[in-house]
Image (tube, rainbow, N blue to C red; front, side):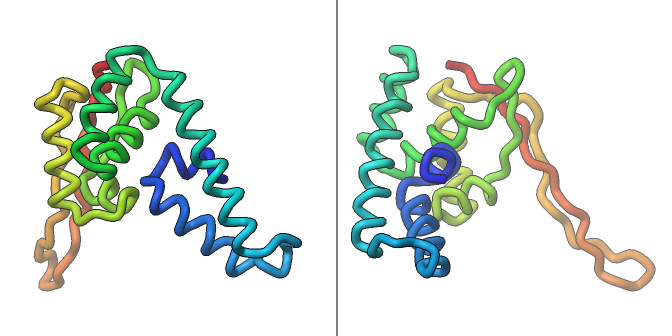
Length: 153
């Protein structure tokens, strides 16, 4: 669970989710919460080291630049790096990135734009926002679509 959450969220969010899981299932565990938290922190550190070792020099350099700005910038980079499948394509909304790294959607959108300016990602197809429309006298939410990005590194 720790490895998956490290790649999909910020480290703070991963830690909070892992400890929440422990809290609601503590009757299953034989170790104390403190011991479980220490083990989780060591696992996150080992996962971070392994993840950094998996990167090429350009990726490492860009990641380091963003990590020096803030841990949220680094988390946004990590989430975007882990999402691409074939041809480096992935789908992500600002709101979804915000949920993953515990930011509001507008701030997450700024991080995505910054990564595009730095040529880490590019917009392959712009997404759409959800809209509230009136249909047959009722308000209906027309869902938006996530932006399609391409990982460039």
